[in-house]
Every structure is written in structure tokens, then in C-alpha cells.
Amino acid sequence: KKVYGIIGAAGSGKRMAASLPKQFLKIGGKTILETTVEKFETSSIIDKIIIVTAEDYQELCCQFFHKQLNEEKIHIICGGRERQDSVYEAVRYLEHMGAVDDSLVLIHDGVRPYVSGDLIRRVAESAAVNGAAVAAVQPKDTIRQIDAGTLDRSKLWCVQTPQAFRFSILKKAFETAYCDGFYGTDDAGLVERIGQEVCIVEGENSNIKITTPEDLTVENRIGTGFDV
Ligand code: C5P
Figure 1 (cartoon, rainbow, N blue to C red):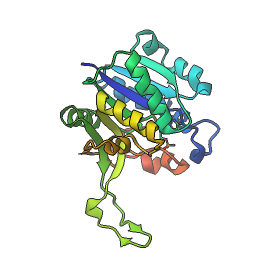
Figure 2 (figure 1 turned 30 degrees about the vertical axis):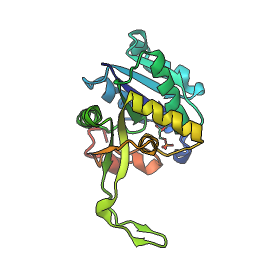
Figure 3 (figure 1 turned 90 degrees about the horizontal axis):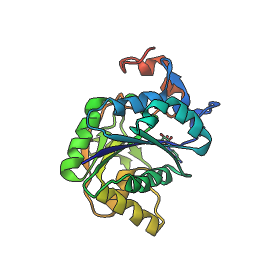
């Protein structure tokens, strides 16, 4: 069965406050999005990649990936208002591409270029067995909740992507969320709402989501394999 990768890249990157959305900024001579997509392209377990982008950046994206588009290894589609809407567009598109109940789908943020091939493989393997899996790391800081004081850090996880799901589970989770008018901040949250357990796979501290300008500083890139 085929394994699909969805790369969400339709955000406007307001928190980066740059002239271009952050996924189109360059690190080491290449855009963040190209670097992220490359990690999935070079993963031996991924068969097809769907990149979700805003309408205004479709053309630019097609330029980056024209070779892979011709080979139909990559497909580029239009995203929606929120991250969840963008992923849902891709989920619906997968049906047209022939995804079946047992197909595996990995969802990844276009702004997490430091993900390793090993993590992609481990999350996929866990989802193949358990139906749903997310990469996550334990917080390094002590976390306090207003009114509840210091939380037990051993029970906390910072959720990353990739998140991987059996297609039937993912489809049901998204359809149920839209039916209920529910919006979450990640895909696993929607999957848990339908009663499906989501397995945690030990993520990587280097697998940061590039969000604000300091995420692009030299100090943050040391040890990630990128030019500094
Ligand atoms: O905004 P945030 O950093 O949470 O975005 C996470 C990922 O979701 C980014 O890769 C962004 O491009 C993507 N996204 C999307 N469609 C949106 C908003 C965000 O694909 N409408």
C-alpha cells in the first residue's frame, strides 16, 4: 500500500514578520520548504507527497518542484484559512489519488526542515502498527499553569510533526471535526476525539518549528546539519 506525505505550507507566517511567508525564506541557500520536502523525498518509505500552499504562492512552488511535478512524485494543491482546513484539503485530495483505508498518511509542517529520515520512519512504523502516532519531546523547562502551579513534567509532551495515521482513521477524524464545528491545533487532537489512541514516538529537540526570527539564528542551527 502507498504511503503519502502531506506538507502543510499554506500559512502566512505573521509571527515571522518577513516579506515572504517563513517557508519561503532561505537557510543555507535553499528555502525552508524545499529543505523540508527533500527530507520526505529522500525517505525510502514515502511514495507520494502533497504540498499544500496558498493560492498566491502556487506558481512559486511549482517552479521549485517542477521536475517532481512532471514525474508525479509531488502534487501541489491550494490550502485553506487555518492549518486544519489546509490538511483537510489534502485529505480529500488523497481520496482522488486512490488512497484506501489502510494507506498510511504522514502530515508534516513545511516549517520543520530539521526533521530526520529516522524520525519520519519511526513515526510511520508506529502508525502502521497502532493506527495513529505523533512525534513529541518532553519539555526542558518547568511548566506552570495559572491556578494550578507547577505541572508534573514527566506527564507533559511537546507535540511535533510528523504525525501519521491510517487513512480511514484520519478521514473519519476530520469529517467528525467539521461535522461538530471543532477546530484543533494539530491532527492528533482530532483523531483522539473519535476515541482512537495516539501513540507517542520520541521526537527530536532539533526538529523545531520555525516560527519567529530567532529560530533562524546561527545558534539555533548549530548541530542541525545546516550551513551556519
Ligand atoms: O502557523 P503555524 O506555525 O502553526 O503553521 C504550522 C504549519 O501549518 C506551517 O507549515 C504552515 O505553513 C501550515 N499552515 C497551512 N495552512 C494554514 C496555516 C498554516 O498549511 N492556513
